[in-house]
Amino acid sequence: MKLNQSFRLIVVFSLMALVMTGCRFTRGQGQAKPPSAETQPIVVEATSTSAVEALTFQTGRNDYVTRIDGDPREFILYVPARYDASQLTPLVFMFHGSNQSGNIMYENTRWKEKADDENILVVFPTAWKYPLIGEGGVHEKWNDVTLNMLVEPGTELKDDVNFVRVMLEQIKATFNVDEKRIFATGFSNGGSFVSTRLLFEMNDVFAAFAICGSGIKLGFDIEGVELPKGILKSLYTIIGNSDDKIGEGTGHAQPFPMKAEDIFNDELFGPMLVNTAGILSLDPTYDVQYHEPAYTIMTFNDSMADADNEYIFQMVNNMGHVYPSVDNNRHGLDAAPLFWDFFMRHPLK
Image (cartoon, rainbow, N blue to C red; front, side):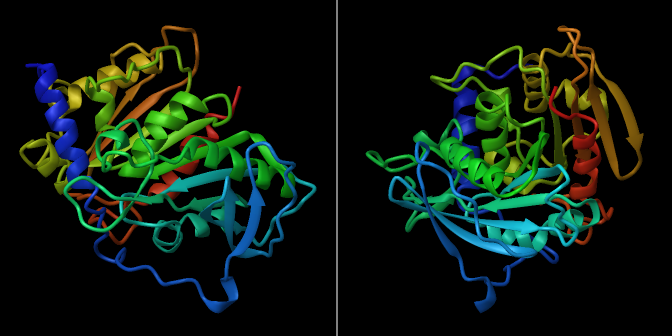
C-alpha cells in the first residue's frame, strides 16, 4: 500500500520536527569532550570568490573558523600521523546530526582512528544554529531540502553546499588531496544533507556517499523538490530497525522489518528504496544477504545506464538512532571501516 501525498508530507514534517529536537547518542556516544586549550580554533577569512590561502596545520586535530561572507563557520580537520605531502591523500567529510557538532562526530565515530589506519584526511564540520517552529532556543541543523519548512518565518538559511565548497578549496590549497577519492558521510540530519544536497549538487566532486539513520526523505513527495535522475553515484545507507527517531516521527511500528521482501514492500521503506534506486539510475531489483540475527543487506547494482555504481541498504537488528561505532550497538558494527571499504570500491570516474 502506498502513502498518499498529503500523508507523505505529514510524515516528513513529523520526522523533521522530531529529529530537530536532537540526535542523541547512547552507550559511549554521549557528551563529547570540549576542545582543549591546545586546539583553539584558527580563524580563516574566506569567501567563495576570494583567493584561497593554505591553512596552518599540525598532525592530529586542527580546529578552524572560516568566515564566509561574515559568518563564522566551524570545522575540525584531522591530519593523520603518516600524512606525506608527496602522496595523494583521500578526503572524507563527516556531517553530524541535529543538535550535534563536528566535535561530537570527532570524538565518537572512530573516523580519526580510521584516518590513522588508512592515511586519510577527515573533516568534521559544524552546522549553523536556527530558531525552529515550536522549539525554544536555536538548534544546529544542516540545510537539507526540508529545512525551510522547519525554521521560523523570515529566517535566513545558510548555503551549506557553499560552505562545503569553501572548506574543500582551503583543504586542497593545503594538502595533496586525491580528487578521485573525496567522500561524504553523515548521520541523521547530516545524512539527509548528504543525500539531498551533496548527492544532488556536488556529485561531480564527491566520489561516493554513505549515511546512517537517514535517507527517509528520498521516499516522499516534498513540495517544491523534484528528485533528480541519472546520478551515477554509489550510496550506502544503514538504519537500525529499532530507530526510535524514525519510528516516532513517521508513526511506523517498531521494530522495522528485517526480511528483504518485507522491507521492499513496506509503506515507509519501499518508496525510499525505489526512489533512491531511480535517482542513481539503478533498476529496483536487488540481491540480498542475511547475516542473522544481526542485519540484512540489500544491494541494487543493475545499472540502467551501463555504469558500475550501486546502492546498498542495510537494516540492523535491535539498533537505535546511532552512527554505529562498535560500542553503541549490540553487534559491534563499526560504520567507519565498513564505509571506507565501500568508498574504496567507488573512486571518481
